[in-house]
Image (cartoon, rainbow, N blue to C red):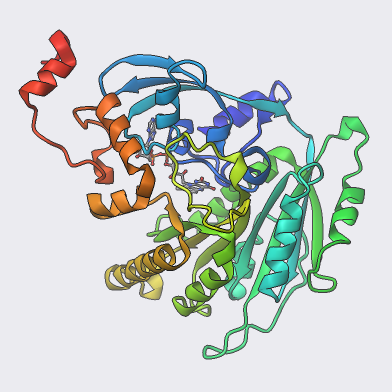
Length: 397
Ligand SMILES: Cc1cc2nc3c(=O)[nH]c(=O)nc-3n(C[C@H](O)[C@H](O)[C@H](O)COP(=O)(O)OP(=O)(O)OC[C@H]3O[C@@H](n4cnc5c(N)ncnc54)[C@H](O)[C@@H]3O)c2cc1C
C-alpha cells in the first residue's frame, strides 16, 4: 500500500512525488487506473512517476518493463485496468520529503472566481505543491471536510432554502516547507493569496507535518468509522471534463443533485494534459478544437446512508442519476469517466473511442485468453480454441 511506501521512504527523508488522496490503496491498484490528487498538476498522475514495472502477463510470462524495455507492455499496464498483466513490483520516483506543509483553504461564492484561482495556482508549480477544491453544499459538507483541517474555520454561510439553494466553493492548496532550507512558507502563502479572489477574510492557513497532510483522509475515515458511516455504499462518479465545459458540467451536476440532502464530497480541481503520457492506457477527453492545456477532474463522492433511508431503491436511483450525468456530460461536453464503469462491451468501446483498437490489440497480445480482469466486463470470456493452443505453444494445457 502507498501508506507503507510513505512510512518506509520517510525513514530515508524521501517520498513519492505524486499521490492519491487516500493512502490505504495498493500501488498496483492505483497504477492500473492513474492515481490522482492535488500534486497531479505538478508531477503528473502516479502513472507518470514510474521508472520500471515487473508484470506477470496473461500469457504467464514475468517481464520487467520500462519506457526503454518492453515499452508497449509498460504503457499498456499503466492505466490498463488490470487487463494486460498483474503488477508485482514497481519502481517509483522519489523526491526529498519536506518536514512540514503549509495547508491553506479559501472560500468562494462565485464559481468563475473559484476556477480562475485554481487555474492561477496550477500555473505556479514553482511555488505551489498541491491544489484541489470542493463544493460546499451544506453544513454537513462543511463539517465533514474539516475533520482533518486543524484550523478554526469561521465560515457559516447562508445555504438558502430547499427550492433556492446557495452553494459555495473551497480551494485547498499546500506548500512544502523544507525547514532546513530557510524557506518561508508564510511569505509564499501571502504572495499567492494576494493574487486570489476569495471571499474577504475567508482564507485559513495551518501548518501540519508532511505525513499528517498526506494521510489526512485516514483521519476522516476514522471519524466516519466511529459513527458507522464508512462501511456504507459509496455511489461515486469521477469524470475528466474539458476546461471549456466545466461551467456547463457544474450546472448539469446541480440539476441532478439536491444540495440540502447530499452526503459526501464533490471534488473539483484542474489537471494539465501535458503531464499525462498518451501512450499509456488511460482515457482522457479529446482536447477538441480549443486544444487547451487545462482539464478538470470532478469527483462526486457520495455516501448512501441506510439510516437516512438510502438503502436499495434510493441507491439504484442515485446510480441512475450518475449514469445520466456521465452520459450527458460525455455526449455534450466530451467528458470521460475516471475509474470508469460501463455495463456493456460496446459502452467500453465508446469510452475508449479512437483508442479502442490499440487497447484491444494490446489485450490480444498480452492476455489472449482474456484471463485477467473479467469483472470489468470489457472483454467477454471466450472458450478455448485450437488457435489458443497454437498461441501458447507447448506450455498451453
Ligand atoms: C477510499 C478511496 C479513496 C480513493 N481515492 C482516490 C484518489 O484520491 N485518487 C485516485 O486516483 N484514486 C482514488 N481511489 C480509487 C483507486 O485508485 C482505485 O480504487 C484503485 O483500484 C485502488 O486500488 P486497490 O488497491 O483498492 O485495487 P483493487 O480495488 O483491488 O483493484 C482495482 C482494479 O485494479 C486492478 N489491480 C489491482 N491490483 C493490481 C495489480 N497489482 N496489477 C494489475 N492490476 C491490478 C484490478 O484488476 C482491478 O481491476 C480511491 C479509492 C477508495 C476506495
